[in-house]
Length: 265
Image 1 (cartoon, rainbow, N blue to C red):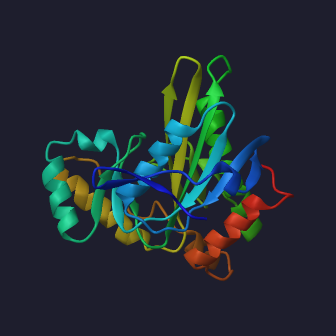
Image 2: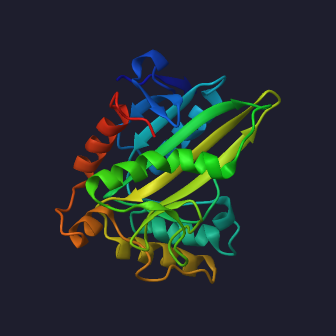
């Protein structure tokens, strides 16, 4: 799929592929465009893509985007209010890991090699009922179903002390696998919803937790990630006497699962 870009001065901005170029799947009875975005961009560019999608969806249109980015620490606006935020960003970036602020809630997430991300973005009529719990369920249900097919008893829940901890995360065996966040943009005639998660597939969670804790320390925050609260899909598969899985293999299989005619969460 070829992406088009529009320019403003010398700065190229991303635009969407044509909707007709995207395959479709169904999630919770909703018809959804599926974009398996295989371009490895910076985290800042990936944030821009989500924001562009949020501005472009309308009516009953919905899209899932699967994506990865170059190593980054992606933080929330809450993190950005820390006493020494700018100083922390400079020090983390000097180590080769960019720090990027997103518009959704939660706290810091390490998006490193071995993780994948999924965004679900859609519009709803403003008069239609909206439930935060239902919207998160719609986001994570396909992932939970796929993990169970792989043999992992995943579910939605919270692990206190894990990175970006919340009640709508994806957990397995009491360990966190995916952290979720959401933003709802309310317009006069509709709501636009951006929900996304970062999933640990084959990364070293200890490295990720150490990066987040270093950021918190440099930022002047008392918050800390506790050890032993998260895992990866690959490590848990091994713990269940199965073969570990590389991130590319998982991503390919998950994309195929989502696009299967028989799939509907």
